[in-house]
Length: 122
Image 1 (cartoon, rainbow, N blue to C red):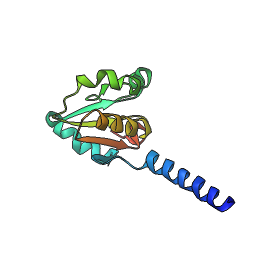
Image 2: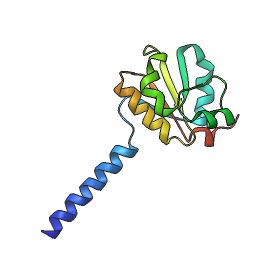
Image 3: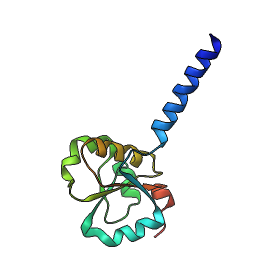
């Protein structure tokens, strides 16, 4: 009985970690160095920073628009579903969550910047 319970608990933990850290299908991940190339295609992409307004004011990349993660659901209509959305935050965790939310809202081309602003060097 105890062994079965332990297997179930282990399964739940593995499922939770998988859901938390594996990107959803259709979401591309790039590193900050790859972002520099993406910034050259400004016309075909839209860039959003999902950090808080204070974090954004402190340091941001000029082409990025600030749409805090907690406002993304109600402000998603500001984005075009016809263009790729590139998402950044401070470390890559909030942007990963934002990418999953955008996917659920019907966006198809979504890119997460792994490492976020912490790994960005101009």
